[in-house]
Image (cartoon, rainbow, N blue to C red; front, side, top):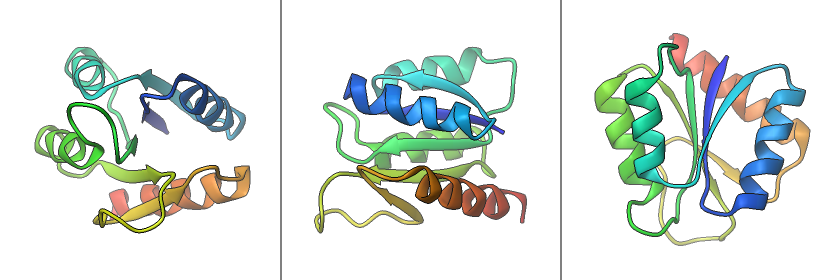
Length: 116
């Protein structure tokens, strides 16, 4: 699976991306929505799952997911959050920090959802 990992926190993005690689998936990284959309538009490979922080400066993860879904309607979407409560995310939510097992579980769920 090819996963786009978007988080404005460099350390969180790096650790999460390393975990994704450890699970034998490919990963593209972006620090913000603009970078993620630029990569999506220029990528020759189909991105299977968007893993995005909900709260980011500028464009939120929710808005980013809508843009991704417009370009690729069957993409799997996972929202990450370090906050309890607040914005409701429509779909899979991963609480930060997460374990490798939690990440694997939600990636499997998002992948199955995308294929259905």
